[in-house]
Image 1 (cartoon, rainbow, N blue to C red):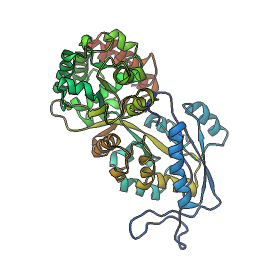
Image 2 (tube, helix red, strand yellow):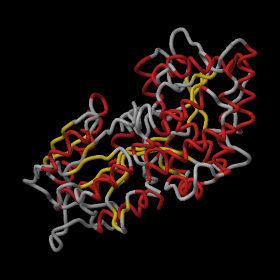
Image 3 (tube, one colour):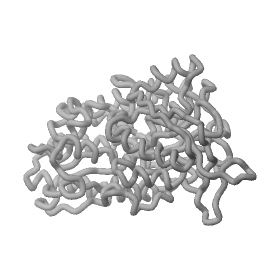
Image 4 (tube, helix red, strand yellow):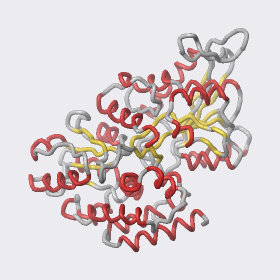
Amino acid sequence: MKHSTRLAAALAAFALAVAACGGGSSSPSSGGSTTAAGGATQFADLSGQSLEVAGAWGGSEQKSFTQVLKDFENKTKATVKYTSFGDNLQPVLGPRIKGGNPPDIAFMPNVGILQQYVQQGALKPLSQDVISEIDKNYAPVWKTLATVNGKVYGVPFKGANKSTVWYRTDSFDQAGVQEPKTWDDFTKALQTLSDSGVASPLSIGGGDGWTLTDWFENIYIRVAGPDKYDQLSKHEIKWTDPTVKQSLTMLGQLFSKSNLIVGGNKGALQTLFPQSVTNVFGQTPKGAVVYEGDFVATNIAQETKSKVGTDAKFFDFPSINGSKPAVVGGADIAVVLKDGKAAQELMKYLATPEAGAVWAKLGGFTSPNKNVDLSSYSDDTTRKSAEALVNAGDSFRFDMSDLAPASFGGTPGAGEWKILQDFLANPTDVDGTAQKLETAAAKAFGN
């Protein structure tokens, strides 16, 4: 899940990720996978079989995922080929499906795209062995996300916690500010930082509209709760609902404090996500706080000299009116396009804590698998993010804009992205913004 491609470098650029083959020693009587007496998952012997895994991951992520596949190969004697398609999921995958030559497994960057391919008849349901592994290792909400018309199609493998707020530790120390737990404490902390010398402490990447949808979603789930969040994500309630207006009001009050925003509202609208991070953690910092997902750590490491865990830390998105902990996020979901025992065995492997632990030890990875030992993570910062993601349990919700039709939730310069950018420019127009969101949503959902 590339950090902001909508789950990493702008998860609106349909990232495809990978899949491969599976196996391991099997019971001679069954010829298939078994569970050993000690509880460890066993896999079929796939000697001589090969699989293709196609995905978005490249560079260091590809190298890490290759180690996951190597562990699977060792367990099953299968051969796995990985193909990176970058951000061109639909342009590349579509023709291959039409030509009858899809990869065995691919990773879908969000639930909406998974559902789209199910409707096209391109995906194969998971075997009961895979489903049993999911039931054993994931909170029920994850299985529900990958279920369409009663059939389970996906294994969430690489997760993203998008309920993290990142800050410069030296700025907090100098201002005497503690990590805020509540929304009121958060807004007070911004003012304290400003008074202490960080004139405009909050950096917002409003030039990328998806960052603003993430702001709204994190406020909304805390104002309205997970059930209402589900209803709004399906357009079962209108965007003019009082809970939407209450959330927009809170967001608008924050956005109205132009003096606390790096570059003011106009500057924020010209700031892309990567720049919003370097505004805080670069060599000449302009701010002290930036909200976005755990993938911010990758930007810090690759684009600044700040050290995650020392110069840069995060706190959980603040509670609102006593709201319980909740996490909005996403995941790269493995799906089967070419059915067969090897493909199903690989899917089962990806659902095990062993698979997640391989990448966790290498860094740059968060698993939604609740049985991946937290000690597997290579640093405390990632461990903290993974713990919040897992502990959210059924209070985890997938990024709402990724669940919506792309015309509403995933198109630059249109729909929710554009409307919330207009709201950042004029954060007092709550009623007008709610009505615009409802009009656009009704058109996109067809209801």
